[in-house]
Length: 174
Ligand SMILES: Cc1cc2nc3c(=O)[nH]c(=O)nc-3n(C[C@H](O)[C@H](O)[C@H](O)COP(=O)(O)OP(=O)(O)OC[C@H]3O[C@@H](n4cnc5c(N)ncnc54)[C@H](O)[C@@H]3O)c2cc1C
Image 1 (cartoon, helix red, strand yellow):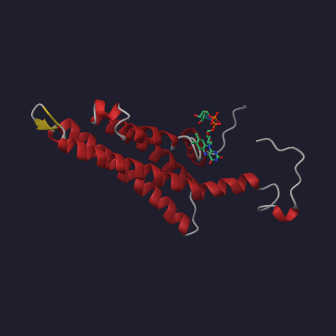
Image 2: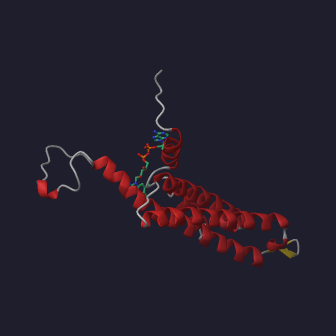
């Protein structure tokens, strides 16, 4: 959108003049946890679908759930989901107490997006050919997970925020 020669009445100004970028960054501390919740919920839903499938689907005369390779995948995804859930819960807990931690919020946003994509990928794989087909809604989880790494701050931007809070701003010029 391009605005030119637009005059906004003084009473319509949101916040302080010249402070828009800062206000927008504060806004992200409140909105990013919502995206974390979306990512964790999506990953949890996908995992539950996978659990049902591996209990029912039989290959080589046994349920997929009996193979150790399958059990390890389920164990790992359950652990990653729980870690992501706890990360964003801590971020919102601090936010609720007025002790906002933008680094933690960015960690939660990046990590929950990453595990959502990873879990969706593994769930699709556990469904085999069925997972790939549009008739089942498994591939939808994969598509829906990817946006979490893009909007409300891409994963690269989240990592820049985390690194900046640890390393500060390092000048690239000598
Ligand atoms: C479905 C959907 C809904 C959206 N909803 C909204 C919305 O409601 N409100 C809104 O304001 N926006 C919304 N967006 C926009 C979204 O926030 C942007 O797409 C996102 O911020 C990335 O910006 P970009 O697409 O311009 O990519 P670019 O900025 O061109 O980035 C492309 C790639 O380069 C990387 N990159 C860019 N700069 C750097 C850097 N300095 N260092 C390292 N890597 C970098 C990015 O991380 C990314 O991987 C939405 C987008 C989508 C797809």
